[in-house]
Length: 254
Ligand code: GLC
Ligand code: MG
Image (tube, helix red, strand yellow):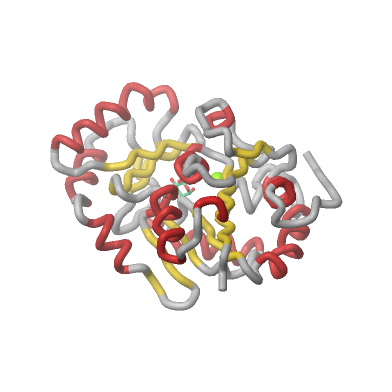
């Protein structure tokens, strides 16, 4: 029975896009996973939709997890049995997609991402950083006034995800911990950008990988967070050693 949960973001965390060739760190982490998975559930938490996540999985060859948290926590699916409909029902309570879509589409600074990036409970836009600070507080307040409290998740100085207020990676991970009866002290969340902030801030073990974006490094995070030197999977391995889940990694890379 699982007594721990390893939760990792995909882009920039499990999978690096800043290296020219294949990442030897990913090979090292994948080699360590089978032993870890004897008592740890493996969860991927990503901003991608399932179709987009599956494409990355096919490109990079990482294994099937126990649970997929996709669309920045707006969807949860299990290796053993499809989508979590109870989660859908929970986050659907105060969601009105058409209102969110109409309101966001009317903002000149917001450019729709491809339809493939959109979900039933997630709308995705591009937003230039220069326009973000002026737009986001007012947009959130307006949607709340229209009866649709949303979570606006701005990351990579480029992507704006709009999801129900009850969604987000942090809420989804907290829900999974309750569902499996795993205490907060026995999760490890791993991330690199602002859309990971809420799950890194749950108060349990967490790691910011060495190649994390300035937006995450520069913002507030609890003292429970471990700051890895290694990038991507090497940073995860370092944290697994730091928290005593694995022996110290033999190789560390920047
Ligand atoms: C992924 C998704 C995109 C989202 C971004 C940030 O890149 O494809 O839709 O905006 O993550 O969560
Ligand atoms: Mg990321």
